[in-house]
Image (cartoon, rainbow, N blue to C red; front, side):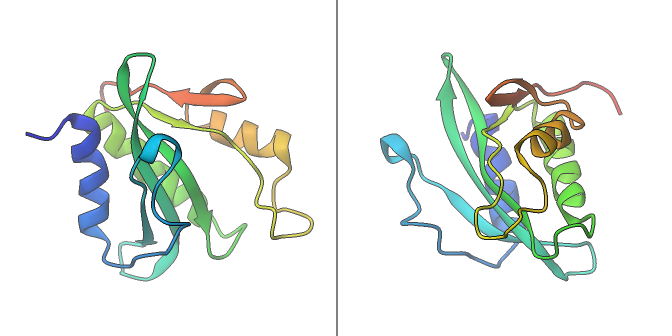
Amino acid sequence: MASPAHAFVLSFYTRFPGRVALSVGYGPGLTEIFPFVFEALCGTPIGIVALAVMTQQDREVVHLYHVGAFTPGSGHGTTMLDELCSQANRFSVALSLSPVPCPTEIPPPLGSDALDAWYRRFGFQGDGHLVREPVDGP
């Protein structure tokens, strides 16, 4: 039986058929990374998400390697993160990430401080490496 963290990742990876080549699909320690094209409810592709199950402080968490909207400033990043957080609550899984502005856009849509503040709106906490614990209730 899959752990809650693995079940969370597979719920998204099997829901969205679009695939993205991201490096070779492995992170540090040969952690398998699951990149996919995130779709709006109507089926329109709106961005890319890359997830992996990692062990942090003796527990499994889902690390967000990448969350990127195809059209920055469109609200699609918020849509994707809302859904990721909602499902993390449902699966009782913590999410982690290290916020880094996209280096390919000059200037980036959000600078380092603004990006950090954006993730904190969704309940992420920490210093440099951010973690969001699952929330009970609606």
